[in-house]
Length: 337
Image 1 (tube, helix red, strand yellow):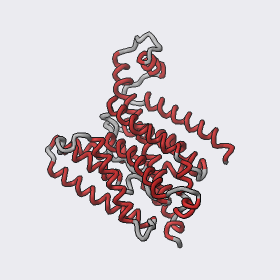
Image 2 (cartoon, helix red, strand yellow):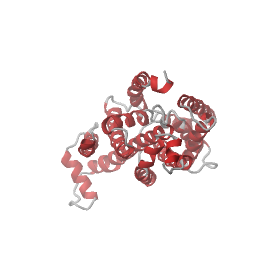
Image 3 (tube, helix red, strand yellow):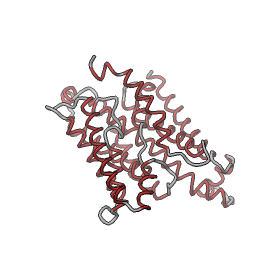
Image 4 (cartoon, one colour):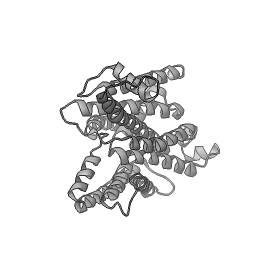
């Protein structure tokens, strides 16, 4: 398998590029590959700048920021799932199950309903997402151990708590605020702007680079705390760093795109099937798979029907059967029977 890792990574990168181009061309307004490259070249100063006004609006102002935000969201969710699964040694954990998405959603809802008290949507989402995952972790902690099943149950409890808080925010919100919260929570990239891309890229890409650079430490954490200590690693400190970086990346994406579940659960397992258990390859592999998968889901969301389907519906249709298969396949490992 090791001999095929580099060609496989190159193949996934090509797949991501093809998915990006396909998503750029797909839509109600048809255009050619030449139109796309001419418009992009004009903005990069590589062409004569002679492009149609309609192409300028659709490609540069609507589709490109949307697709870039979708790709970064897929990367962030996939890598966050990889990190959580490695830190907690549990194949079922991901940002949605551990309550990060619900916590970040609660923070974003507070920022919508009470903008004077919570002026920064991304910052508030991160703080509440961080609080959710830490609360899940400490509730599951017992005598220095974190049982996998207890961790999942703690995540469900914490997620329900923050979901109740979101319900309170909906009750207190005005009609306009309620519509904003509702559409935001269903997930989607239809409101993506270049400002969203800038904030997300400035936060997510450094986090992903740091996580990839520290991926060898995640391999040691996956062995267990005692083995990690014997190899000179302080598991609690390293785990906290991993959790902060992964939660920051996931929370910022949730604050921009809403709740998008299952990506952080499916993509790490798909990457492990391709690259093996080494997180030095699983992290970049899951990032490429997550970005391509999110682009595909976003394209389906806006092209299947005359109106746009919330992207969380599409990811859940695929994710729910996958979770059922994972529970059946990993049942003995999880429950020790």
